Image (cartoon, rainbow, N blue to C red; front, side, top):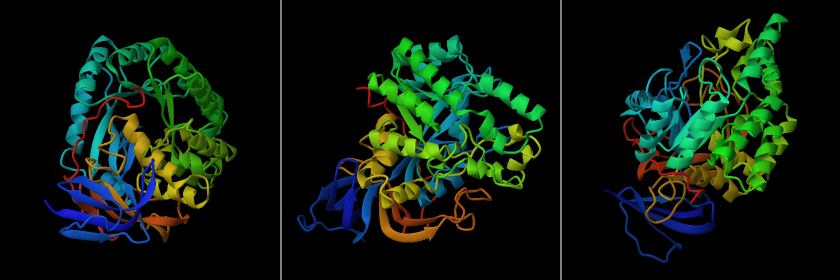
Length: 463
């Protein structure tokens, strides 16, 4: 194995910023030391002068090859992890799906088969539980033992993934006993379906109505209910893709009560709004996801939640569908538009833009994009930081590089960009995954199959 020395950069972790050299050996970080204090020899020296040296990003919410609405997410594990690497993300946690009537194990095996030998970066799995019963509850214990330590439930999508309150309570009770973390899609799907039906009967079929029927109050109500069910069960709770300030208020209240409740938001809720859903000529379909985009005034609350730690993690919920042939399935009926947006490539850059604009500190950027997801999902300190013994997942980041987001230049397998024409300051220059260059001076040098499956421990905020 080669020894790599990264020299001259500003090392930024969630805990500190310091000018330091980083020595890498056998895929791990060997040492971090003051420049010139050690006389290291290395086979490869990377000059990071005037650059940041940061941990590889961890995107804890992706859906590669996800089946939805009669089609599949357009990114495979190969194309999706390659795009993630281009954006400075070195670990994804994707969602294996249990089919109704099938075992959790069958779903997990299916996702292992999809990902095995295909990934450019490391990956783990959460488990979507869509059929809570005695046998699947028993299976949860075994999955925690083999490193699948988080389970997603849905209060939305009746007839597909939906679980009722009794099923949710049982799953939470099981997680309380086995150390697992329940992840919740918190929207009142039963009520939303009524509003969808009524909107369509009125002839309200355009994409913007997707946002209007999936009301912020129904996200808030479901978030409140999930928190109280978790409290009854004595279980921790992680609410995914928080988009509404009213839902965030429920999380803040629970955290003020010192409940083990956590929340994630996504770049689309921080940078996009219902203005995008209302774009004419069916262009709004590009922005259909659930929870939906909210009016712009919700953004300030989400940014504040990230600063106050009422929201701990920014993930992408990357679930891309091409506009042509996939999003178009919903022409004339917004409820048939596949729910999901691309984003795995742009998360680190968009959050750095927030640093440039003064919304976040540099260390908070690394906290919400790297360290907190690693701790939340049992990967820290192997992932999410730069310290001796950690995996050498390292990004050399140029804070001065300028680029424009566009479908013409991104690497995700989708025919549009949700951020078309957006100018950003800051960009990835070099990415190492376990010490191996995946991006080298803005050239892809990785390969499918380098990425390894990573079993996870339990949530480290609960210890």
